Image (cartoon, rainbow, N blue to C red):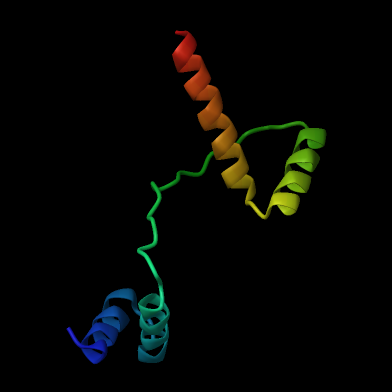
Length: 86
C-alpha cells in the first residue's frame, strides 16, 4: 500500500484530516520498533486519603508517570503477592 493510499484510508477510518494522517504515518515510519498496545483500561473510582493522594502526585511528577500507571503497578504487585500466599 502506498503512503497516499494509507493516508487516505487512515483519514477515512479515523475521521481525521488527510494532513494529520500523513503526519501520523510519517511519525510511525520513523519508529524503530512497534509500539506495544496495552490492555484497555476501565474507569474506576476510589476514595483515598488526601495525604496519600499528595504523596502519589509527588511520586508521579518525580518519576514522570501518570497516577494511573502508579496505581496500576501497585495493585498488580499486591495481587501477585496475594496469589502467591493463597
